Image (tube, rainbow, N blue to C red; front, top):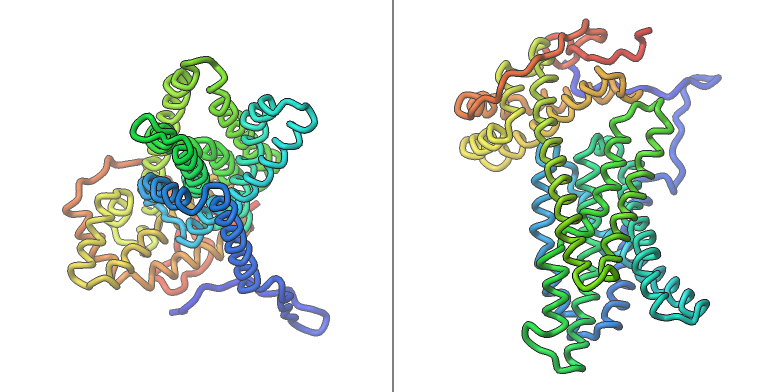
Length: 438
């Protein structure tokens, strides 16, 4: 039995195989180091700017209040991502980019643009309105979209659909809103210190109510539209180049438009804010929440539909597709493994569930003709990871399939003829995508 999947080799040169080493700037540790340095420097600069504007006391008050909605938002996006959990490094990067790099870009660019317009037009009030309704949405949504774009380009294996786009965009926007809320709440506290305001009539209380209580989801909601565009683009075939470019741009334009409409609600009259909030923001939030949950359930259905082909090939047990297609059964399997094998066994089951889900999505894309050129290599990698963890995962999943409620049966597409020999498994897997098929 082979211990590792086969990978494509470098093409031979005129005198035999040539192994080309990457340049020093292409090495992973160089790129990671540069990215961490960039985010760290952005964080220090944004920290200094916010503290300078709010003062030390205002900064601490703003920090303490702004952090309140962050755990709830992160938990909501992490729950949405439980079917095929993305790597923690992507989520940490997204939050750090939003809180540091995107916030720094927004503060500098918004301030510069507003001052320039005020100087050019000699109308400070008009410049503030234009900055809030036009400049800020363009700058802020573009800065947040950069994180989604970077994950989409450089972590393509982890970015496979709508849920991935929504999660990365939402966590980026959560980080951005966290920094912005520190600034607004700290500034409001400073204004109260000067004016002597206190209690529920204070500026701090009003700002807290609007930004933390009523609309903590505002920034995540805007940027989620950008994430939707990237997510649908990820589902498109590689040959659909125009669609893969236009969909993210369309999502970004929608995010900017919604952001501008929200920021401009204060100019719509005395009750304009509440009208926009109740008549527009809440319905859109409910619609996107429903879409995200529906997509999550659809992903579980895809798992139940695609994995039986690997049962026929002997890679998975008969009950595994149903157990892996139910979040309750997955949790039961992890609990069973933790009870009988400790935390390492539970972690092995969790990884097994994640790899099996990725395998189902990969086969689904291949069967629809939307898989990439590395389909075969990726499939072998995933099967190898499953095979290494089968001893810990199979008993747990079989137990979960017995005790957890079974989902409704689904139609399973027929498995095509295998086209490459088995390695490390009992028989050849039934892959759905053949790059050599004409």
